[in-house]
Every structure is written in structure tokens, then in C-alpha cells.
Length: 287
Picture 1 (cartoon, rainbow, N blue to C red):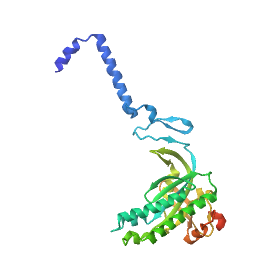
Picture 2: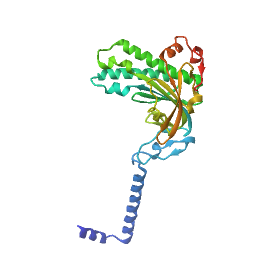
Picture 3: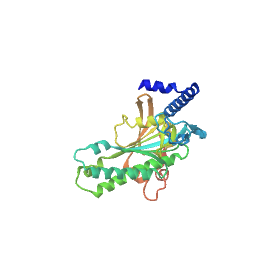
């Protein structure tokens, strides 16, 4: 076989060999370029660029994961994340009816979303939690406080409805009352981007927000407002306030105020005809 190849090349002139060498070299360079950029040959390069701040196109990642659009990388953002207490125990409990569990949790999450999106935007759902966001200066302190209280009100109203509906005698339906709600509020800088049709955020302040969900507070119902978010929200002075310091891995100490929410107080604030928290009770600061 090798001998035959040698005979074939004997018939090539110097110019022919040079031409073939050039073609092989160009082809090899092109192959390396395609592999290095991670670009499928059947897609134009421009389809994978995303718009950065100021409309500057950024190159696609080597992994082939592409972000559709990035806004200002330093967006001053207020984050609100309601988190259902005892969710894991409720879902993992023995002999729970899966159909009932799903309907109960989905109904509560839906009530939270409907209440929150009247003022702020929904980013994404994560099991028992929903991440809301807004530009930090786009709403008044009262509006953000109203939003948080309306989320609580919607959650408890729906929980009471589900308990009264009495779907069946399964353990899930009998333990709806065990579910409760915590809400975390934080303010910080984050890169806001669109990925696979959803708006998400990237940055250390997002890490702080999620890390705070595992904390030392011994309660199933409260609002935790970090010191960074204190100027963005007003909550009722009727709530008991607790000052906390949370030691977060890789971040350090984060200080916050914990408002222990009383359901009756929330109901009084949100009676039919009420327009906002401030018109019902009067407000104290977050201290």
C-alpha cells in the first residue's frame, strides 16, 4: 500500500506538490479555527453574539452556552424571594398523595406570583421559592412594603382556602396548615441577562440572597431585610423586630433586620378598600 502511494507521488511535479501542501495547510487551519471557536459550521457567527452594555457584542463561550442579551452589568436591584417553610418535609413525607401535594404547592406558588407581579417582576421559580426583582429606585419604600405584605396575605388566604376545601383525607391535605412563609429582601448590584427566555441575575449579591435562606433565625414566618435593602422598604412598626448577623461562607458577616409577621396584622392592613400599608397602620422604619 505504502509502495503504491510512493509511486503515485512520483508522478506529481514540484508545483503540484506545493499546491496540495497549501490546500492541506489551509484546511487544517480552518479546522482548528472552527473547533477553537466552538461554532457549528452550519450557523452564522452573528447568531451567537449577545449584546452587552452599550450594544457591544461579546463572543460566544467555548462551552457552547450562549446568553441572549445582557443589560447594564451593574444594575442596582432590589430582590424579593418568598420561601415556603417546611416544603421539604411536606413533599418528602411518607404516604403523601403526589397529586394532592402538587396541587397544594402549585396553588400556593401561584398565589405568591399573582400578588408579587402586581408591582415587581418575576425572574424564576425554584421549587418552593420565587425570585422577584425590580430596579432599586423604581418603587417607593411603601410600594415594596405593600408588595411583601400582599404576598403574605395571598399565601395565607390561599392556604386557608385549601384547608377549607378538604380535598381528601390523605396526609398531605391534613398537613396544609404546617406550611408557612418566609420572605427575604436584599439590595445589590447584579448583571441582568436573558437566558433561554428567562430573566436572571449574576453577581455576589445574588449569592448573598440565596445564602441568607439558610440562617440562624428560629422561626417559620418572617421577613428578613438586609441592611443593604433597609432604605428600599417600609414594614409595619407593629411587627416585632430582631437584629441579626449571619456569617456567610466566602462572604463574611451580613447584617439584617428580621420582622416577625403576625397574620392578624397583615389581614387588618389588607381589608377590602385598603390602598396601602401606610393608610392602614402607619409605618416604622426597618430598624
